[in-house]
Length: 228
Image 1 (cartoon, rainbow, N blue to C red):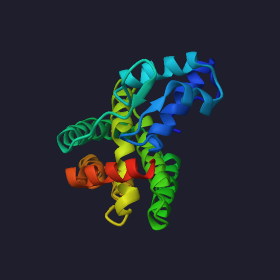
Image 2 (image 1 turned 90 degrees about the vertical axis):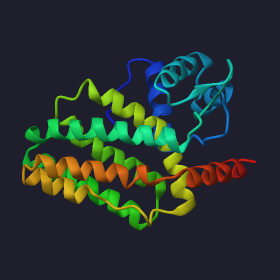
Image 3 (image 1 turned 180 degrees about the horizontal axis):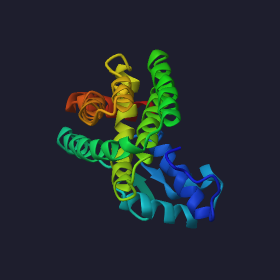
């Protein structure tokens, strides 16, 4: 998922990508600490590769280190979420526009197929599948352009917001989601740069950007209660 290598050169690399995918899919619950030992047992590895993976993930602001043995998802507020949304809009619209000239007919069909998976996830109210397939659509789109500098920044923003998106979707459902990917693929087919920019911006703002402080706080409280 999201440019994960098919073969890992080291155990540290494998552990990093496993934890990264777990965060992106919302399997880390905001407000609940996890321990280094617990993660090591979960992945059946020694603490050393866990420490290295956590070092990288804390540097990406995906996790916060509470002490030398516990980590948690960083606290989220409506103000912080607004900043993440606006940063995503700025970077992802740029990435999409840079990719547009390089997308051929076969690649466009692949994007449409991915969007079918997004639509299916919304229909069956599967929050994890929606988050995963939605991010895969965006990642595949941007991967067609010269975005090597932008993509790590974008993925850092995804890591910061995905756990909260999962919590809220679990609580309120996916009924409020408007899939703007059809507008995006139509814009690609028509080579319409402005329409693509607007579709990507709307997709972000009407998704994660539509969450408010009340929804965040209620979802986090529910997530904590479910773990007790």
